[in-house]
Amino acid sequence: MAQVRFGVVGVGQGRSHIRGFQSQAESTVVAVCDADLGRATAVAQEYGVDRRYQRLEELLDQRDIDAVVIATPDHLHGPMSIAALRAGKHVLSEIPMALEPTHMREIVELTDRTGLKYHMANQTRFAPALISAKAVVSSGRLGELFYGEAEYLHDMRYAQYFPDGRRRWRADPEHPQTTLLGGGPHALDTLRWLMGIDQFVEVTAYGNRKGLTDRPTDDFTVALFKAADGSIAKVAVAYGLSRPYCLYFSVYGTEGSFERTRHQRPAADTTTNYLYTNDIPYTPQMTPMEVYHRIDPAVPQRAAHGSLEIIQAREFLRAVREDRLPPIHAREAARSCLALWAGLESARLGRPVPIEPVP
Ligand SMILES: NC(=O)c1ccc[n+]([C@@H]2O[C@H](COP(=O)([O-])OP(=O)(O)OC[C@H]3O[C@@H](n4cnc5c(N)ncnc54)[C@H](O)[C@@H]3O)[C@@H](O)[C@H]2O)c1
Image (tube, rainbow, N blue to C red; front, side, top):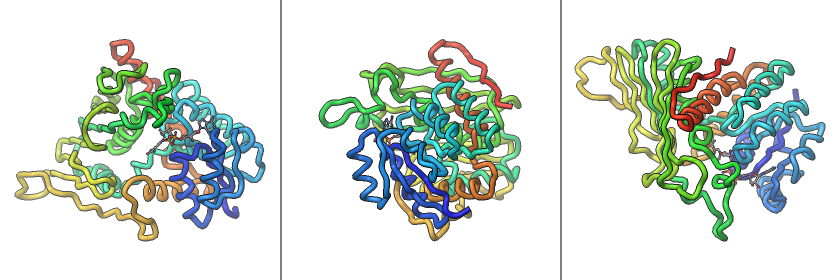
């Protein structure tokens, strides 16, 4: 295959993906699409992209486009990914995969039937420090895992309104950004992967709304997920809190523990992580963990969005070009997002909710 030709839909976070795919020799971005045509035009000019469209359908009609990035508001991910797969395009979609289980199931079914590639863009899984932690967990040095924690703590109060008072999509009364199916995939999908848990079977969650009261949904949720082997994961997502951004993980096993600090540097890659294992002699305290999976020197380091999206773009391209499953393929994404959907249901209903299995 010559270069894989991308169209990027939604040019806010979509710009990180433009940078990602423009940085790879095997891909090119030929079009952008945004309901705000002025924004699409400005971004097309800034990144030297030839074509810009206002409607997804116009972009999907372009026969020379092989793959589509979906970076629009959360409630559009499911329907837009389905439309793109039906139009024969590979899809890299922002988190979450979809808000509705029917859309999640349909994306799995479409990728099964067509062989088209789908990846949910939880770039946190590509953070070198977490890849190092995953290697330690996979080596068995932590023994049998029984508990893990993930926290997505992101003060989003600044991101609800435009300066002129109009609501941004995150505060849209009809489709507000939810906790667990908003930032939640960064926490749960990464923790599930870190702990090596295929699927969770049941969830109990609670939520409240104290920091972002002018919205129809909770701005804080804490959820306990139970796996089939009895291990447990706690996930908290908060948007209305007073604290700098933090993405926290810990994993506990019978022979050792992994924790990252909540005193974080801006980038996931530069935060110190700590390890304790019974096979490190004379260590009465957690030990800073070496990051031995290093970022490719060809990947520029950025404080926030940039470097991990570049690694993610490379992995997605490999999957398309070598006809193999991307790292967070449709089933992987559905395993995380169906669990998160059930967590929101549990908080709403006030009781434990079973999680639909993904065969
Ligand atoms: N993975 C991450 O770390 C990360 C970071 C930021 C945002 N995101 C995700 O990216 C998505 C977009 O968030 P954002 O911060 O870029 O928001 P944003 O408001 O900056 O950008 C969204 C864009 O989508 C456009 N849009 C809305 N409806 C559309 C439609 N029907 N067709 C075409 N374009 C449409 C808007 O005009 C806007 O330009 C969200 O799902 C968000 O959760 C992920």
